[in-house]
Image (tube, rainbow, N blue to C red; front, top):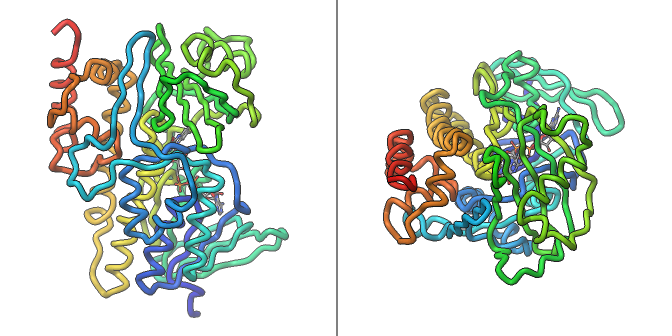
Length: 412
Ligand code: FAD
């Protein structure tokens, strides 16, 4: 029987919309099944400049730049009296690459991406939750339940799983594994921030490190409408917080830092959310008739805001492979997708590990106040350019992290 489409995509988050647009533009018939109706809340609000390049190549950038999102040009790191402001434009990449981006409420951002993709002609079916999968390259079937609770089936030559935290295929195929790092918990909310401090830079994400417990950190992501996303990350089941409610933990953590005074007049506009177990990986990234993108393939840690950038990068790599196949070329999913994707993910992983073991915090807070190539290489990674093998910090991550740490450590 003839399939209903060439490619079925599970999920219309950034990974799903971006790959759908690339494939559609290359002449393929694409159907996206999305469980929710948009707009819907999802965490992941601070973008990195590198994802602007992908949006541009996908033809989705105009709609994003027209939306009036909060301009972002860098990151500020604070820990007690230590302070470092990093400008993403001072990076190591060729000048054509983006050095700025946006901070976005994902409900609206994802709706814009999906809306543009649908306007281009992609069949996106909201309220369609995938419930089963039979996968074989050339003959795949996805079972779903539609918004009225009616079951249905979609037949496709190939399936792309971009289901994010849903992790649909890894769960169905028994590929889902917990992440390698220790379990951490995130508490977060949105507030009307009422920040009046003239030193506060709304064009940067503010990452605050707890003054005495350096594995605890916070994000403050301002939006363009006077509201902000505020979150705290701490070790899950930490005995220091035994018996305390999430709200009490959050208030105590905020008041342990300068955020307490910065946000003294802030009013919450969302209930406090709490999530743990978000760090995850999949045993395989592709198989007979399917490929996994974005968070469905795995998620490291929120500290460098790399999630959406990795999701979009994986979408573009998989799109290239599927378009090559569509044009009659052979594709090696390991060499053309999994290995190149892993390079950048491994770079971010090394940075995340170095953040929690303290080396990266030492590097960040003791950066020389100059415009050296070495500093630009560090900034490039923070701006999301984790796949550029010209950058020694990508090609030889561990060696350079050690070298930088030795250079920056106060005792040296
Ligand atoms: P998603 O954005 O999760 O989209 C997946 C879509 O699939 C959803 O719309 C969902 O409804 C749909 N779906 C799920 N199950 C099904 C099903 N059965 N059938 C059909 N559809 C389905 N990243 C950043 O870049 N910047 C940040 O500042 C940042 N902060 C973070 C903070 C925290 C605490 C955490 C945990 C993560 C953060 N992230 C951040 C990561 C970010 O949330 C994700 O990496 C990103 O959303 C992944 O995009 P995606 O397209 O893979 O999946």
